[in-house]
Amino acid sequence: MKCCVKSLLFCVSLCFVGCQPDRSYMVFESEEPQSQDAVSESVETRSAEVEVSCGQCQFGMSGEGCDLAVRMNEHVYYVDGSSIDDHGDAHATDGLCNCVRKAIVSGKVVDGRFIASELKLVNLTGESSTGDASATRQD
Image (cartoon, rainbow, N blue to C red; front, side, top):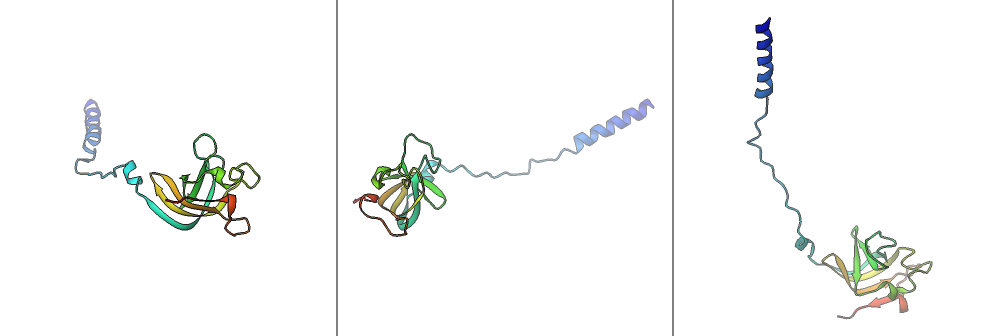
């Protein structure tokens, strides 16, 4: 009986040792994380209709105060070249802190920010607005 128990234990231990897979032949490829330089490529936009609003109040972006942001191609960017105050009272009922509006923009995305050369809000009736509600930057 003692011999049978030893033989059984020996067989069981061989199973555990002998059944370990040899993974030395396996090669794992991993993607290198994208560096900030890869994101810094500029993407130019001309006369595209996008959504604009306050980045913090409506788009949930981090920051202090109220800053103009655009949502395009499923990404949200802060805007340089136009301010939230250039487009009327931001805290009015139809202001950019209280609703998301459509706008026609031209500019480019550089280093994760939208550099606006033109940004015109579209009136609630669908026409491009003029006067205080439009901002154009001349380069």
